[in-house]
Length: 466
Image (cartoon, rainbow, N blue to C red; front, side):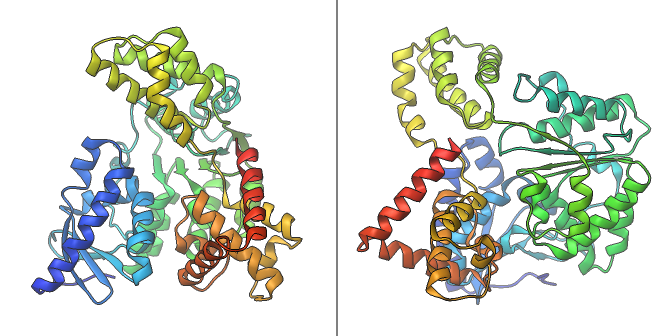
């Protein structure tokens, strides 16, 4: 919701906002581990006041807010689900106005309605020049995906690669590969209009233009692209209006043999709440998967990082890290950064014994990635119900218990917000999910049989994900 003027808050309202933001900022500091990023992007945020259900916070500029939306929406969503949604509080952002721009903007689930200039040059800076094919390390787990991506970049819009769909779990290089395509096209085909955008930003622009009654301007802008790259397309799930706009853009570009590149956390077969006509188009795309990094790739990444940092790590240390860090590239690089920092502080190389002691806690904390889809499947099998029954309106004990178990396990093992869980299970609001989580949490303290069943479910989920 837009506010036409900056609100004036009472001392009590200001104090309440400062107290809430103090708690929230401490939480954010624990999940945004880069201190420079935290200082640059979180510290400038100023709590203004809490009035009714609105928590108004001020950011330096609209550009600043756009960056938060692009890079930290998951962290803010998690923060809201813990500290605000249980009390029915919604964030509202304020930023300094220029000309007739509105002063505030709603931040519910951080689906920020950010105005973006319709200028192709705006998207040049979105492409990170470091994310290119030359810096994309290759092994058996990603070789085919890289080969197809390079073919697309060299000859965009050529069959059978007119639509390229890259899928794989978080942190395996989808963004790197899609940005590499954009950069290569710009280099080899400077006459082509190239747009790289995250799906979250795409949706934010669409919502804003709809409020400004400029829906068709939004669609027309993207229909003029020669190469359209949309990252994390799974954000479209459940967003009916945005899906309709996306289809109009997709279909127009598809019929003109323009190049479309989409990335996603899951393959098309796992999609839910996506229009059939969109799903059909995506299923007909050239599909490539990026797997979790194999041992060969993990070794390459570690050796490159050591060389870049100019520190000494013995072969045994590199092997130890490569053998233990199996989930994704980000996790691998994060562990390596910790060791590099330690090496610089000590001004000496790290041997295997020291590395194992430093990494022991980190390795024990690593959790295999579990998805809500896996949880639904395991719970459905365990209790003999269909997945669709869990999303139905039925409140019978046969359905209600496994549904609440899904809520409990999804909240425990994934990053889904309470609102997101409610949407996926087709519940009216997040309070139902909160009740389900609390119910199961209380029951397993006294119901040994239920606790054993949930423990077994967790073991199967962890085993399947590892």
